[in-house]
Image 1 (cartoon, one colour):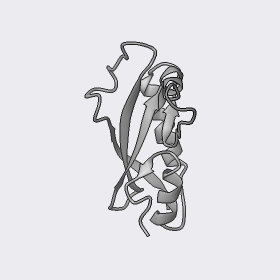
Image 2 (image 1 turned 90 degrees about the horizontal axis):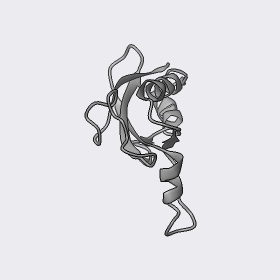
Image 3 (image 1 turned 135 degrees about the horizontal axis):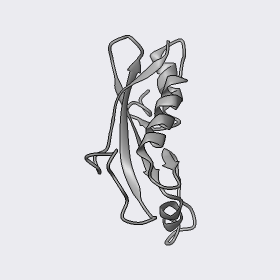
Image 4 (image 1 turned 180 degrees about the vertical axis):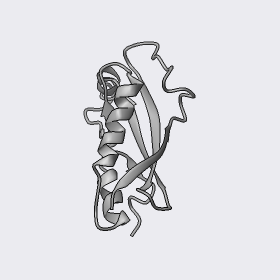
Length: 116
């Protein structure tokens, strides 16, 4: 069984292809919906796409910042970011959707990540 992306979008930015950050420090929320290739069903995975400078700013008031589910990029190039996410998802396979979901949760927070 393999995973496939059904959609990718942001609650922060309406048109990701046209988005240009106003400065070098940025972070936007991305959600991708994935399911088993060629089969019904889909679930959401959330990640933050951010710049190195934004990530560094997160430690101004604390010495530790947990950057799980972050994708750090040098400049916002939606085609490259989307291609990276699509490639990671396409390479996820497993015997069950549960197994695939756990693999995808390394990239984005799975809506069922901490379910028993």
